[in-house]
Amino acid sequence: MDLNERQEKILTIVKENGPITGEKIAERLSLTRATLRPDLAILTMSGFLEARPRVGYFYAENAEKRVMNNQLKKMTVKEYQSIPVVAKESSSVYDAIVTMFLEDVGTLFVVKENSILTGILSRKDLLRASMGKQDLSSIPVNVIMTRMPNVTMCEQDDMLIEVANTLIQKQIDGLPVVKKIQQNGEEQYEVIGRMTKTNITKAFVDLGDEHQRS
Amino acid sequence: MDLNERQEKILTIVKENGPITGEKIAERLSLTRATLRPDLAILTMSGFLEARPRVGYFYAENAEKRVMNNQLKKMTVKEYQSIPVVAKESSSVYDAIVTMFLEDVGTLFVVKENSILTGILSRKDLLRASMGKQDLSSIPVNVIMTRMPNVTMCEQDDMLIEVANTLIQKQIDGLPVVKKIQQNGEEQYEVIGRMTKTNITKAFVDLGDEHQRS
Image (cartoon, rainbow over the protein chains, first blue to last red):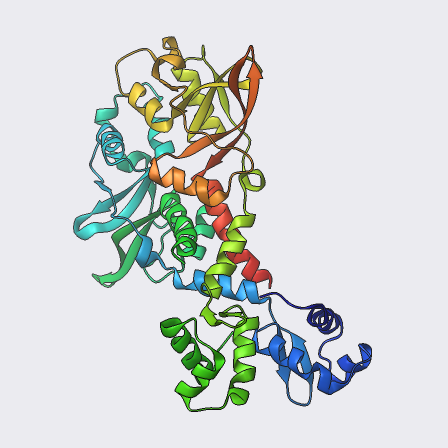
């Protein structure tokens, strides 16, 4: 939406002086209230300004940012998650490397029966182990994995933007999508998916595709 | 921007019948042209409709998508690139693994003098090499690297959305940001940066931060 010069002036006045009444805005512009009415209506209807009876006009949160926010809020883990790739606690480091390689993933989730999460293995963990002189096929992954409760997880209804922020803040490549379940009176986490920077990158591309389809 | 019921009806009519004159819209709604004037003004000023004299109203490309597009177009490689991490052609695979590990990157760019790109090494290349029985410190990286011209590159002014799409389409983790230069009458590429899914994920988070700051 392109604003005309007078509308831009009104926005500036409200940004700096709001809340401010229509009369006061008119005064500052040396115009009548009636002249301003259409501009104020347009700015309010378009979300640039908010009007409160008997108080005046406020500068509304930037309309563009609100649109962006609406789009981002719609994007959840459920819609973008991948299939989890898992290893058993008793698997060898060698087998885990082969799995990571064949499945082309950067993170393996270590699980016990019923897909209950017990730990996580990053490429870095496996690379570090493979640089030692040990026999990789004789070390079980649960020796080198990061174990619960030190695993960062997410759930299907989480917003993508939150997960992206977690990946950046914690400097990790991926995290498991889990479902909380009660088992033997304890809270456990069943692994049902995988979220990675690849999924976030796909979501970013989708934002652009939206545009191209329009 | 929230549209009222009448504005939504107008949009639907224009979507289905545009271009259509104001008079015709008024007719379909059993209203006068004068009654509709403010609604049409608002829809036009907000970018939902476009008006062409003597032709009528068109449905404009979705305003949300246009806003999104504007934001995305502003995001370029320059703004989000990281510092490149490079290896010399003569470096050993062992040294390359150590570099990748210490620098915490998923991709190494292999260069000759003056940072001219000659190849690229992915985590997968190194992992594959480290699973063999060879002595990693005696194999130079140029034996296992993907070499020019088979390296996907980008430039500083490329749009982030294009790079993200390339990463997804080619299933790669990162690519070098290069500057074309002429050397000995040949086109060469100087490595000046690095773009990865991590950078894209940061850009995605920034879209949300924009919102949170507002």
